[in-house]
Image (tube, rainbow, N blue to C red):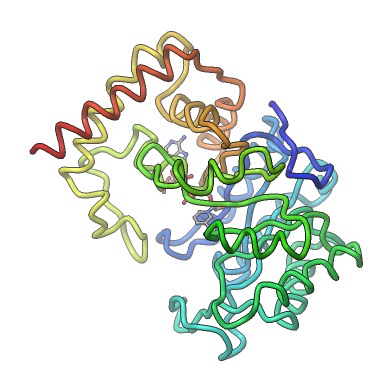
Length: 328
Ligand SMILES: NC(=O)c1ccc[n+]([C@@H]2O[C@H](COP(=O)([O-])OP(=O)(O)OC[C@H]3O[C@@H](n4cnc5c(N)ncnc54)[C@H](OP(=O)(O)O)[C@@H]3O)[C@@H](O)[C@H]2O)c1
């Protein structure tokens, strides 16, 4: 698996990272712990080093499952987690409810340090490789948050600092205080807005861009059939993006990638992930996997290199179908 630097931290991480949001169960209709552990171990065995989690993913559950899965393999993993979505204080601003608990966006310095201690315990480690602010908090000056993160770095509890869901001006506010090693943002074939904002802004600044939800929550895996139903709190249930009409539209686009997939003996999901990694400024793709099979399939995309001509064909197919949909 190809490795790329996490900013100026000196840490190299596999271009594909395993995302463990769904593994926490919350907003994904629950989780199967054994499948989740198998997915994490299969990812590591197939060459993934970067594992991304967060306290908010199941209120600690994802981090705890990661701990179980990496027991005895901590040194093979670049462990990334986050701070800033909290449920133990009324401070900050309301974000979302989870299992009857109010989750707030809050990045006060005392909270960041407390959260770090909690994550270290849940992950069963003495250091976090990449510590990221999950969502930005309008109630705390960024300077205060960044000072707390720099303290944690000096203490050896975290090795690199990242941000997520941040505007470019927020990125710059962090950078005015100390080095930012990564920016984690939503980016996929269906979510390309940042091609004119964060991506060009970060170019040449030695900051990794971690694309999250590159399969658009599974919609681009090529396996969401018209009959697939989502249950419980799965975010895809009653979601316009997963409407019958949109599934059909996506299926039409993905069909165009089949000759490319065939040429590389690859799957559609692998072509989609490989395309993501070739986009200007994208350094890593964080892909979710719920079981061993998905983990192996996704990991293998890390070594799939698409030619300039193939990338052009993919872009043309997306454009062609988008124009047709707009004119509908
Ligand atoms: N910073 C943030 O605010 C933020 C937000 C979102 C995500 N993230 C990070 O990015 C990671 C990835 O994003 P994501 O989980 O939203 O979405 P994703 O990677 O776009 O899609 C993951 C989902 O697609 C399905 N899938 C994955 N591989 C598949 C395959 N080979 N074949 C068929 N289905 C497959 C699985 O769901 P099913 O099996 O249930 O269909 C899986 O949970 C997260 O886990 C998290 O680490 C961060």
